[in-house]
Length: 158
Image (cartoon, rainbow, N blue to C red; front, side, top):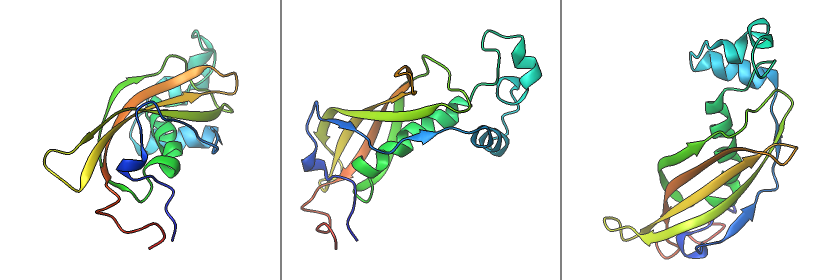
């Protein structure tokens, strides 16, 4: 079965990917995610409370937004070609996400290096940026991934 992800050698610093997949965030997404993660914050769940705030309505759980933005990137970057996710850094939410917002994602490769402890792998740092339908930046983060090298992995489609 073909893989969507790229091997370590296929990335280059400065490489930019505009992901085709987009997603409209629903009230159900926010409600279920907040409940599943035991986050009872009024800003996610209580519409009456939020009417009196600067936002005027509930805002989407930021952990959902982080997961969605990174998730949208996976098919074009690391699907089937990553050994592990090593971490997220510099996670930012400059604007809130609201129910009904449609999120699109861009990714950029910011650094590459061979793994010192695993010769069959390399480390790629991506910067993922999520935008709403108004083209406002709603989330950004750097994600560090331990990627397979082509020579060590199975050929595409195997």
